[in-house]
Image (cartoon, rainbow, N blue to C red; front, side, top):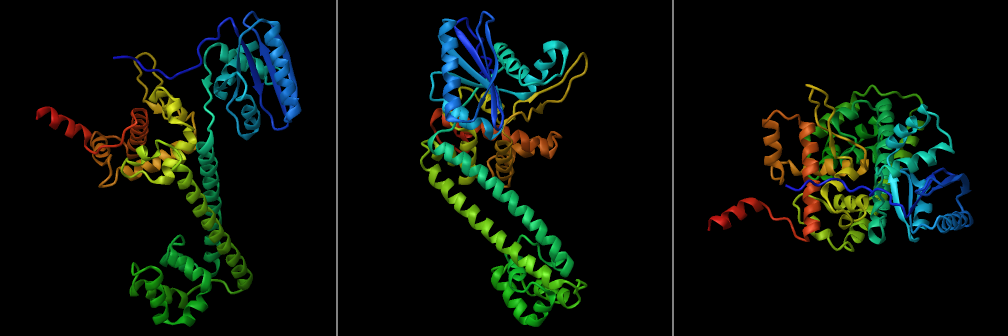
Length: 418
């Protein structure tokens, strides 16, 4: 069987100049090296159009002087500070690569046998890593995929902010009406309705049991009945919440409720845009044919990957997600296989929640999941394994330009028997 390995940058040939960048918020440091060892001392330049053009001209002059033909530009995987620069460089005739910060940290200590970190040393170390062939090609999202990445990240930030606000709201509710949280979960529509319109236990008592029952039944759409309404009314009547400074707390609660509603509206609008852009991705419908994968999840995965078609093997995509496996073994000791987590964390999160949905009673991975549990696999480990299987399935469907067929193997064997 043919061995499939993660695609890395091939060893730099004698016609390639290595240019590296140490990324900063205001100042970047550039460095050039030719295959014969000639180099340019690390130099600073700024985040401006003029500086970017000066960097490019300096690089072209060095390439011509050394009579080289190709340019590889590498940098560490960083946050947003590198984005304007690599969007400028991706339009140039260069190969963009990225280096794992863990690799540079380890190679750095080999250079001079010291953990010393300076702006002069870092670009040289990145060049050493690239020369060893440990850099990965950079896939930059374009068009709808770029929009999906931004929308997915914005949605994730909005959900984080909303969760923080809900936690603040819960703390304040506990001060004035601690029993409320025992009767209703604060994340439900029923709880939100009472918090917004009848914030204090006195207001709920003033409604009377019959009115509370009608509201509970209407807002919950019949999911909650008379018993829950009675519990809420009794809790309000016997509440031990404080009375001093209550109006000020209620004022803040009203503010938090309005913020939660605003975040909800923002998240809804983000998801609508995600669905719209998803329709513009040619292979999106192929992925959506997988039972249990929601549009928002698929949109997020495409945004994180940028373009599934740019990858040749599933191992490349696994590495991008940080779902590639490793083990630490020595002598007679055989270490456990674990995922590296050296990839895009949001991509792993999306796949993990997709796996939870896939292992439900009617999910496509339900049987496989329980087979893992029967073999003694821990639930968390089994869900991670299902995440890997889902990613492999998505990659295969996009690669083959096909759609998901449930029980494909059973149907295939049936046709062979016929």
